[in-house]
Length: 422
Image (cartoon, rainbow, N blue to C red; front, top):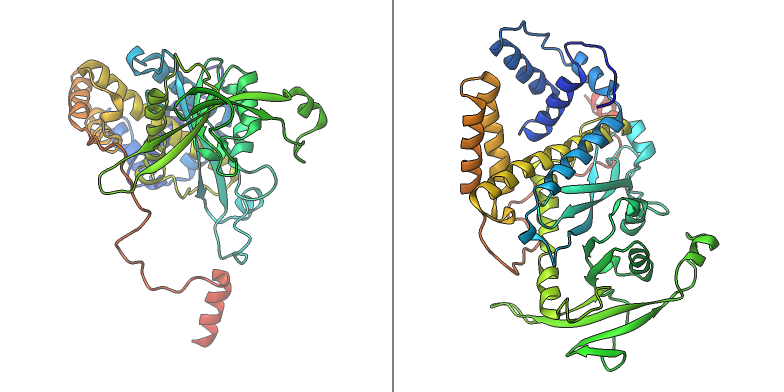
């Protein structure tokens, strides 16, 4: 790996293995991670270590962030190498981009780098960060991500995307929602050989009676360069072209039981003979997969609230979530390739649960690893999800929240006030 280290009980390989297992398990506590490590040592005839978590936590702090960045890159490459040609779009890799937020432990260090929402009183909220991720449409693996504060200048999703635009490879297709369909991202993608397919921005007025007609409700228009925004320097502004060609196409989405919706796309895939309107409409309908991938990270892997108490450890924890997510995707890809399935039809939650259960017997060495791996792939192939195109899920919950009062002042003053009253 290019890193030097002392050979300790908690050496880097052991710590990374424990850290990834920790975020993949149902209980994310350090205590369970150490207990699992002791079970592994005893099964191999080694002496158990102390059940205290101090040594393990210090070992995690010693690991550099660059190590986790490199491991994430390697898992993403392994997933991409396993991509089947039939899963591509006209032989091109499609990456989906979207953003989400997460909270973390309420410490002074975390609050300083990722402040809580301004509407909350000090001590009554959690530090909050904004993230974006680039997910492969074919494999579901996450290739890159960026993180920043939730509020402040240049902390929006498009700003985070510009910070990692250099990592996108030439010839990729970027699939995004309407928030990303700006002149700057469309032009930036054109400069770097990356095509964008997104829903047209809601503030842009689109008239299909103008422009070069490519088909029914399919046209080619010219986007002029807007005035220089405040966040852009004059040198950067001069590098953008005065105008770019963008293709608009509109189609209807009909679903039984729902009203008919009209969707207008904006894309830099200009050749209507190669990229037909029907193919682009079908491609954009698959953008919903990125919402499911984010849900897998935030809900199934419990990444919506992080436990680490410093920004450096928070970023390591995020990397471990991403690495663990990609490792589950690798197992799903291996199962899909072995049994001739499409990886998007396999259940991520089922695969993660199967890996956790099979890993326990592997740690104890009860079955030969190769036979266990074959059994695991077979089980994953049987855990499929239903084919529900065009589904809509409202953000509603049936279970009512507990009727507790919201915190209006920090907890320590509350305790002092209650003690005085007693």
